[in-house]
Every structure is written in C-alpha cells, then in structure tokens.
Image (cartoon, rainbow, N blue to C red):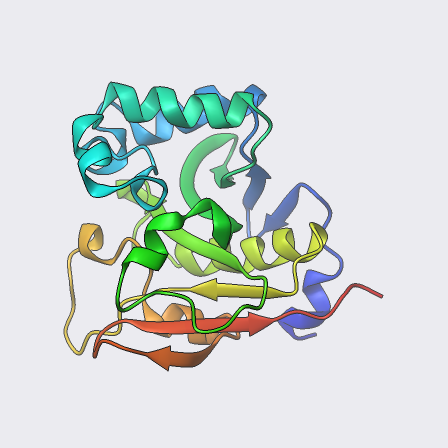
Length: 205
C-alpha cells in the first residue's frame, strides 16, 4: 500500500515506524521546551524567524522569542507538530497557513507566486541523536496529513537544493530531496538553491 493510501488511515495521534506525532498545544508546551533546550533550537529562534521582521527577531532572541511563541500557543494557535519516540520529544516541524509567516513575502526568493491559499512548512528541528534517521521525511508526511485534516488543499515548502552536503543548521527548512520523496513538486525557483515546492491534497473520502 502506497503512502497516499496509508495517510488516510492515520488518526489525530499518528504513529509511523515507532514515532508518534502530535500537534503542539498548551499541554505539550513542556515537551517543546525540552526539545528546543536552552538555546531555543538555533540561536534563540524559538521558531519565530518567519513571523518577525529581522530587527524584531534579533532584538528578542532567546527568552523574548520563547515568550512570544508561548503566547501564540496559549492563544489557540497550533504552530506545528512534535515527533516523539517512546514519549520523548525528538523532532519538530512548523506548519501553518502562510499568512502566519509574513517574512516569507519579504524574501525575493520566497515571495508568493500566486494568490492560492497555502499552508507553509516553515522549518524542522531534529534532536541531535535522531539526525540522519529519516525523521524529517516522517515529520513532513505527518504535516501533510495534519494540513489535510485541517482542511488545507495545498502545502508549500522552501527547502534547500544544494549539490554538496551541508550542516543541519543550514538546512533548517529541509532538503529538496526530502520534499520530493514526500510527493512535492517544484513550482518556482527564483534563487538557484531555493526552490518553492508544493503538494496538492485531495480531501479525505
């Protein structure tokens, strides 16, 4: 059975090859906090990069970015999915309607290509001991299912397409090859290494 058929069987709590996936909620905030650690994943970002102007982001790196993300979650936003192995948080994928990431439209390479409503996969963060084990692909597939469940019809990503291996922190938006494996297709490329990729979704039957 191909992945497309399998996805439709996944419940809200998804389990794929021993990994479970859960939306970030207030109840799961401590797990998000544990995964991101004292450094806030990368340089105090706390997954606020796409939401803020650069000056704002730089000014509130660390604790202020953390507080801003916590306010979003407390306010009812579901900013992405957590991955768990044996109830331990091991990965994160940010995915929300593109309107939540205004900084995308300030990027010459990533600004909108049309007016269709899309959900954006903003970033990945994988625990160090889980890297290189295919977790990004599983998170991406789980995120596609999450978007479908929420009524979205197009999922969009902004991966890196490089001809050489790059350190994980440099490819936090994912690799183009991962998106291809998850059924995404390139729809635009305004910068040599930064394609815009999409997957169109069919509603569940």
